[in-house]
Amino acid sequence: MTVDNVIDAVMKDKPFYDTSGGGVTLSGGEPLMFMDFASEILAGLKKKGIHTIVETCGIFKFERFIQLVLPHVDMIYFDIKIMDTSLSERYTGVKSDLILANFRALHEISLTKHADFLLPRTPLIPGMTDTDGNLRAIAEFLSSLRIKRLLFPNIIRCGMPS
Figure (spheres, rainbow, N blue to C red):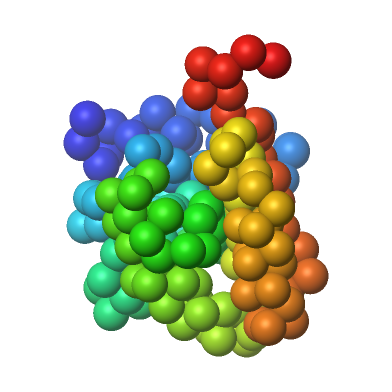
């Protein structure tokens, strides 16, 4: 789809967004892998008065994010999955250093925005993200930034019995 196709499709639901206070969330996979495309969609939606959210795993070049995405986004859902850098690399293929650095930098910016501008999230994946050590490390990290809210969007079963 083109940017215009996406915006046209979204605009069909604008009365619903206006009534409900809703909007559009770019999520994935990782929408910021296609930052130019995401930026164009977000900019077009903002021009049309649509509330926008980006859900990210935090793997992006911060300078490009500031230029291309930040001006057009109302909220950011930011996944903090695994604090330990070697475990992060093992389970996700990426060390947590860049992710945490991007979160810290966005947190600094969020201090000048509304309270829910940056919302950290931790998907609960049994044996990976839901361990006592990982959850404690996430809590300590967020506490060090004086963040008191963490979303747990879902529990991912990964084929494990309930």
